[in-house]
Image 1 (cartoon, rainbow over the protein chains, first blue to last red):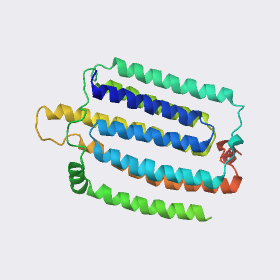
Image 2 (spheres, each protein chain N blue to C red; image 1 turned 60 degrees about the horizontal axis):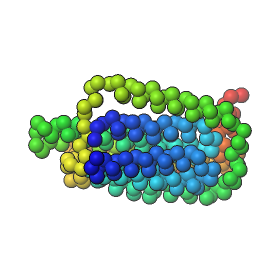
Image 3 (cartoon, chains in turn orange, blue; image 1 turned 90 degrees about the horizontal axis):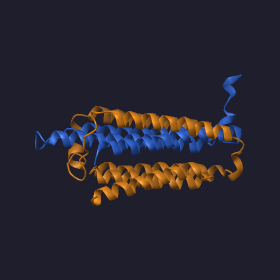
Image 4 (cartoon, each protein chain N blue to C red; image 1 turned 120 degrees about the vertical axis):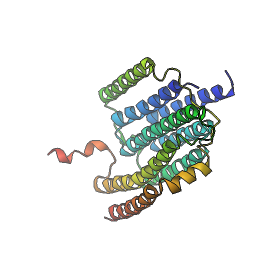
Length: 166
Length: 111
């Protein structure tokens, strides 16, 4: 077991524990902070896969912008801790059993698929995750989707302002 | 690293997000769990792109095979950012109307 494997297992355990804490936390602010930790773990995975551009974008956009937006909204609303009543054990059990069955089924399928049994992921090598090849692909082959996404942002901004002003 | 470990990790994260969407009643937490599911899918896409790139590198030395998946992940992040801004605006509007973010109050379409 070399360093990369150790890092993979550490980051995976970190991500799964933090994601579970997002669910368990009663206080929504704690959930947001745990979710930021999940995003940092996923960025660590991106760095391990040598997708450096996506790692940085993940930290800036998700942990930096989107989660701050969530924190703003939660603090704006001043939600009480006991706002969520606790008489829903059956609902909780049903959700956990349903998602657990989904997970078990999908893992069984993955374990039995022979096509991906010996496929390996290229770790810490390969240059497609660096900013130079990605920028070249983004501004030659994908320039029209890129411009359309700016229109999407404009419409989302107008929509958010109109919904918020009512 | 085998691709199976990445698939199992991403499935676990996705299932945790599914549990959150099904069990929590706070609309903001449900929204955060949707973000968690999106991120699990992103991680799996990047892992698959590196798998494909590693296989293509053995035939050609300087190929850019697999770069499309990373562009796709970038666009998923773009769309997620737009979605979060509109969704949080809707949650704020809902809080102003009902003074709660409990999704069980959102059953007016039933009657």
